[in-house]
Image (tube, rainbow, N blue to C red; front, side, top):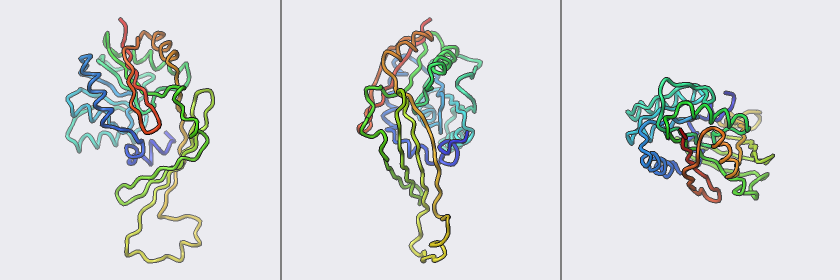
Length: 259
């Protein structure tokens, strides 16, 4: 994994992701409860927030992610919180557990981009769900693209543990896929007693600032595409929920395994 977001920036991931984590957990708890799902696997679990939060609520949780640093972080946080979700390093394309789960999650825009990879992902997920099991994933509709933000530099900043994290993002849409370039600057705040350092005026690099460039791509779907992908892999849509985030809208579609 070469992306900084899954390596050097792992300690900041849950901060900069900008989700309403608690509303998501409330929604997931409600859906899983309605369908009597006790076990769930989080596919592309990242730092494991969803798996850890649902484990606290009594769900039997497993998380899988291709980033070793994400998984190490998730395991450490679980130990600190004294909960016992299981975290595995691996790919959701070919993971084959020895058991079947009541449900699966694929959040944080982790759904694949290419048609063939979406099919591969859904087929593999189908194979380890019980009959009637659920797959819940999030995405945005093509009709919900905020075109006024595309191509513009969007700046966000956060404070954490004496550091200022700044992100500047620029996105471009090509064939319903948003390609983003994100520059992260991590500033270590100066202590009040710091004195001016004349030497830093002439150095090319500043040890007080770290910079990382991250690249990503996410796909926007139409409802028709979602239905076709679902039926093509043996699922049916049983629900779609919407959680607005400022001017953006995130859909949470619930697929159920048929047969």
